[in-house]
Amino acid sequence: MPDLANERVDHRFKGLPPDAEGLTVGELAAQRRNLFTGGFTTPVLALSAESVEHNLRLLEVYAERHGLAFAPHGKTSMAPRLFDRQLEHGAWGITAAMPHQARVYRVHGVARIFLANELVDAVALRWLAAELDADPDFRFVCYVDSVRGVELMDEALTEAGAGRPVDVVVELAAGATGRTGVRTEAECAAVADAVAAASTLRLVGVAGYEGTMPGADGERVREWLHRLVGLAADFDKTGRFDPAIGEIVISAGGSEWFDAVADVFAEIPELSLPVLKLLRSGAYVSHDDGQYREKTPFNRVPEEGALQPAFRLWSQVVSRPTAEQAFTNAGKRDAAHDLHLPEAQVVRDARTGEVRAAEGVTVTGLSDQHAWLRTEPGADVEVGDWVGMGLSHPCTSFDKWQLIPLVEADGTVVDYIRTFF
Image 1 (cartoon, rainbow, N blue to C red):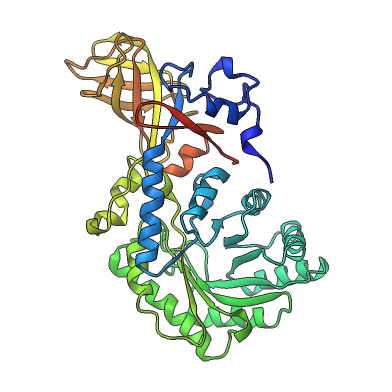
Image 2 (tube, rainbow, N blue to C red):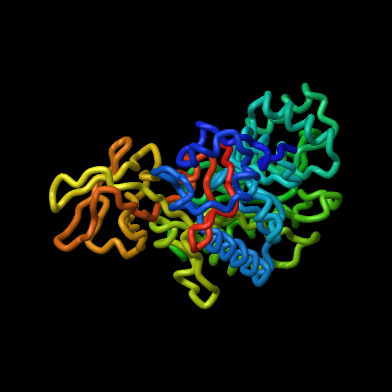
């Protein structure tokens, strides 16, 4: 397993102190430098240590309270250090979307992987067969959503001489015009029967993802979740689950509807085997100041708690051409912008070090390397000031940064989060 603390700091990593060149990540972390006075250059993305810890604990408690197992989607951060923290906080395993992600997980010791996609790449299946054969404690589950997909999986695994069958769940599409997944229950049964005929596969449950449902609302999501549970019950009633699997997997839940998942999964009827109720929300670990601030289920159930946005992108004002306009040195290469523009939140005064609210300052656009700011009358911003911005969409925030300082409230950097996109 790679020791991330021994990786050398160098020019590959944006924002880190130039005088840290040649130190290991562990050595730099041990210096506990200050983000603002310790030699970091702008732009630099920071994660709040306190908010990350709060969010990890909140979802751990939420899953426990509702009797859910939890396999957070690792594609959000692709950060093994955060995977370790999630597993320490009770996660059953980590969800992946692509074979490359699963390979990263395995290299870093993740023992349970839920691949929320159908896997039909013969090369990836050969790798998977070797991983399963080499490690009897490795648990892997993936989607199937077509008879043809089952045929391709069986062919590749047979050619690879797979010694262990691959556990699969039938993916039920979230609506007739949703993303992937089988559209009807009759088609789901045909896919399940194809799995039964393939000696290299083993049916262990059903799953799906409600987040891409067109026109999703609470009623439609719950209706689909009831269909998903009903599909599992029907498969169980018709004897499609081998008792040797030990438990039936029923999985759903992104970061927008996990309250609905908790409600419906609480009503799962008694089946012939115990049920692993597997939630897969991933964005919670950092939360954000846009997409998930608006759509988090905790807005609907505030009595359950609240997530905290952990990202802050710091950039420096490099131009103040008019009283109504300023530019900082962070742009599309540094900030997520696929859903919302960054949000100017605070200004750190270059003269005094004082941090104040970014009143009257709005991000209106991004160039490759610049943020365009509109400054209203009275906005106190000058060249050299640092502007702290909140970001929207965790996935595209993490994937722009390879090594992210984990920063305490007083500015002390206590760790660095390595990403593998």
